[in-house]
Length: 242
Image (cartoon, rainbow, N blue to C red):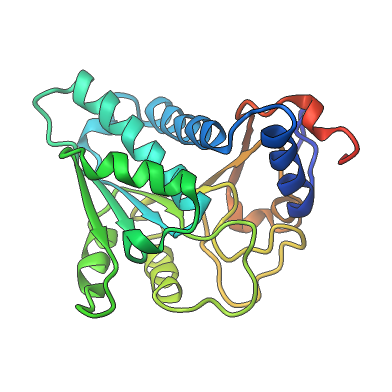
């Protein structure tokens, strides 16, 4: 693929450092980065599906880190768009959290979960090992027209644990039935080497933030169409990193 200037590939470590510089040096809060990332995901789906979007069942599958937070924000933006453009339509928006809300790892994701908890137009399901509601989650994945993969980010290491492993299998079983959009990198793909240690989502499109991650170029088959987008991080945050 041809790479536009400014989107040249970087490692996951470089991306972490750029984000930290953006927040600590320039005051570009990670909450704002998440807001912009989720907005970009929503904008892409709105442009891609146009008026057909109101007829689609959109299921965002969210892990407990910032990839999940990005997908949560995208669902909020989609809810606002669909509700205003098609006010008589049932939104058919579902957010699945693979864990309990109190297990969410980052403040940014916690903040955005608390917002959608109050939004009735979004159906919320969270994985509860005590009740074993995996069947409910599988039903939502199977009935989806659009799947947003916000499960695992660039920090993936080793064997993928349950319930994530089973959910990745279920997402991949929807290939050709649902449009699969991965957030930043397909869940399970090594962001630096492109290797799949255990298993990985096979996306139709991957929206990756700030710059392309090395692993997407080394294993483009998993990511599908790669769309790099900027999320407001100042270019100065790259100084002494790239």
